[in-house]
Amino acid sequence: MSDLNAVTTAEAPGQSPDRPHRAGRSDRPRSLAADAWLDLRTSKIFWAAAALVVVVLAMAAWPSLFTSADPRDCLLARKNAGADGGAIFGFDFQGCDVYAKTVYGARDSVLVAVGATLIAGVIALVVGLAAGYFGGWLDALLSRFIDVVLGIPFLLGAIVLAKRLSADPESNGVLAVTITLGVLGWTTAARVLRSAVLTAKNQDYVAAARMLGAGPGRLMLRHILPNAISPFVVVLTILLGVNIAGEATLSYLGVGLKGDAVSWGLAIAENGPYARTAAAPLVWPSLFLAATVLAFIMLGDAIRDAFDPRLR
Image 1 (spheres, helix red, strand yellow):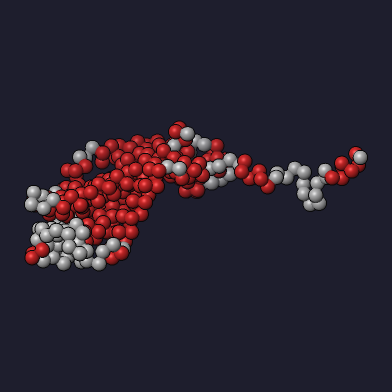
Image 2 (cartoon, helix red, strand yellow):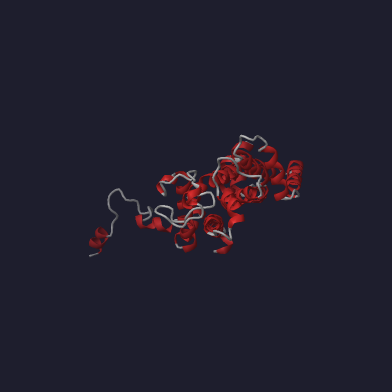
């Protein structure tokens, strides 16, 4: 009987007794990104914000999917007219389709925000990574440089810089506003990345890579940056919404987009004086602007909460 039991309980040919069972894969420790994704999948705020962001991005990339009207097709005979056919939001004081201008306004607004965020991200990446990794006098110098930029009143600095960059009368102001917001909006991201790099560079895996002969470039790009990038990306996600609001503010003040550009900020500036006569041309771009900014900020907050181990 004992021999029969020994035969039935023997390992199958080719199977090692020390090999873990296939079902043991679920016991492997998950990465921080995997844990964050598990949290995000159950977050209603994340999915609502992500859905709204996708709609806005699609509106910016393919506005013809949302309307066939031309936002620059304006007739004074339709001045402040109500909804008619495809013009579900009515017409403004120039006889332009408010719905078409709102849809096409997403393109320049998002284009400026994405471009400015990329510029700010590159500057913050270089400054934050260098300051956090090298430390010493370089860290002190770059930190004081960040403080100097932070000491500039954002709105005042943006007005002066945007007005100077858009001095060309033939320019529509898109490039000028993009550079302005990018040059002035990188400081928070740089500080966050610096703090994350200071924490990551003292970890054991960095010390092990340094002992194996890895140089500063490899340590920063292959070992430190991938483990310090999460809070940096969160800040840039929130910065997208802030830059959309910044473009609208500069356009409303008359130093942002101009000429043939179409944006929510321009629509608000143009229709503000006529709000008592016809409120719709002012209300709808304002609602789209507020919803888009809120969506990016909520998306960034949801990602930040998911990647923050202290909230688990």
